[in-house]
Amino acid sequence: MKRIAIFVDVQNIYYTTRQAFGAPFNYRKFWQQVAHEGEISHAYAYAIARRDDGQKKFQDALRHIGFDVKLKPYIQRSDGSAKGDWDVGITIDILETAPEVDKIILLSGDGDFDLLLKKVREKYAVTTEVYGVEALTAKSLINAADSYRSILPNLLVC
Image (cartoon, helix red, strand yellow):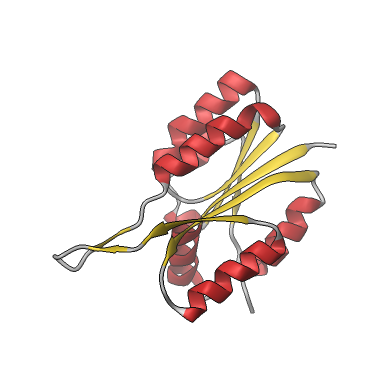
C-alpha cells in the first residue's frame, strides 16, 4: 500500500478558495479522497494561531479528521500588515518526511515550493502532487509536481 504524506498551507488554501469560489475547502472530503489512494501516514496542517473561537473550532475539526495542526502566532505589524508564513516549516517537514513515504501531497499555490518538490523527487524518488486553485497557483509549482489537481467545487464546503 502506498504511504502518503499530506502538507497543507492552510492560509493559502483558505484565501485562494475564498477568492475563487467564495467557499471554504472541504478537508474531510479531501481526506476521504486521498485515503482511497493509499495509507495516509503523515498529515500536517500549518495555520496561524488566533485567539478566536471560530479558528479554534476549525483547528479542532482538522485534528478530528486526522491532521497534526501546527500553529504559529499571528503577528500584527505596526503598519497594519500581518505575518504568519509557514514556508520554512513546511519545507523542513517535507524534507524530513520524504524518505519515509511514497507520495507527498502539497496543498498550496505558492511558487516558493517548486524547488522543494523538484529536490524531493530527485533525492528520494518520491511522487509529488499539488492541489491548488488553478488560476491562483504558480505555474512553476504546477510544473514542478509530478501531478497537479485543481481544486474544484466538489472539494468545497457546500
